[in-house]
Length: 111
Length: 123
Image (cartoon, rainbow over all chains, first blue to last red; front, side, top):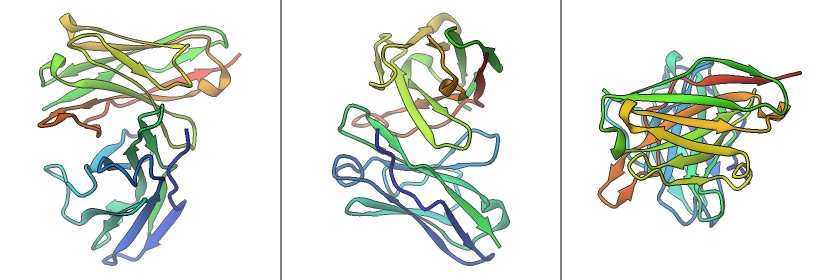
């Protein structure tokens, strides 16, 4: 399966906003509103941040927001905090023979 | 609160099989699809397959369908993933996660996840 393309790393200062991109194809991100984002700390399980492109589960900070344009989805973290330093993965439904594809992850560093 | 608890770490020889369990609590076991994923060291997540606990129906990633079996025991709210003919590149952390039902079917997102089960394949 082809992975979704994410930047390897993104950094920002406390209080700033950063955006992580997730680029796919017309078989996944481009044609489906089934993009989700996960936060993962080292040695821990992934945690759902965003589902169905823009929706936030109960309990997730409103500093996290999602969007999509064409074949690229984005996760924006506003008011960056030290606790946001983690790995972030995007995932999309795909109408190929592998129904779920992930990005390789983006390491967020808070300067 | 929905929770998934997985079995402990495993070390296996190449060619062996491994079974990882995933015990669910806090929700109606048969109401949520259970998906399995793996994450090789320093790599992203790879989707492996799902099982519908209500019917036992399964679906797998094409790359793994010849080596993986998903089962469940509804009496103890536990799902199982067996991977056979292990190779060194199967070394990874294996996760289970649930996909809840939605108004239009089953969700294509996963929450919550189990804590992960490290599987090491080494001679």
